[in-house]
Image 1 (spheres, rainbow, N blue to C red):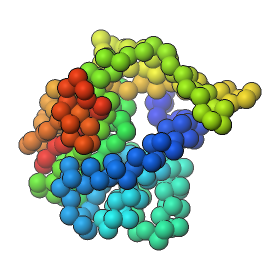
Image 2 (cartoon, helix red, strand yellow):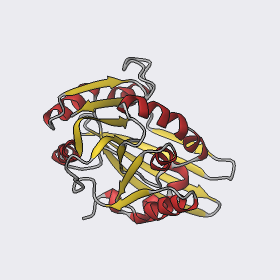
Image 3 (cartoon, one colour):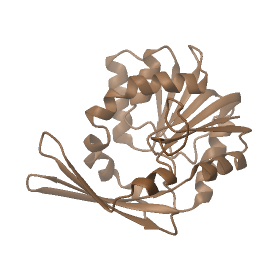
Length: 247
């Protein structure tokens, strides 16, 4: 039986929902913050793991960084390559499972954005990913992981939600906590006119302490935790769980 993230129709069906104009508009500011968190110098080589259609990869490339974007979804990589060609940007996009991609000591920094960490049924696979990233980083280089932390989800948890866009697209979400807050199942239902599309996702939840422990188990020597890419405290005012791990 295939895992939910191997369903190519999911990524095409819900691309406009996940990468909506509001989220795309935040990319410039997010890269500002990421450059500081990663302590990157111009010309540094960055790994964008689970790069999707390449919004961060492309923005880093515009700023003079060398970028390798990795994703398993061919459709997103084709979009990213086309966008890079239109702007004459030199970006490498690689199709690969995040568990398998390793380039020993090749990168000056790495990012995993927008809760693209925690997809696997077995937590050992998350550890495998973290170890692969560490191996791919140069000594002293940093990894930034941006996820929706367990504490944040618990504080605002809603079993059902819905949103409507200006073009009439309606997306309904139903959520269910699994395995004593180890994972959360989200059922997305997309309605537009007479068309109905549906998909179910399951993502592993990490508290700040759990994520720090896992990254240290993977071999990172230091892990700092923030409540946003702007490095606010991870407390009751936090917006995201952002971990900065140093090799």
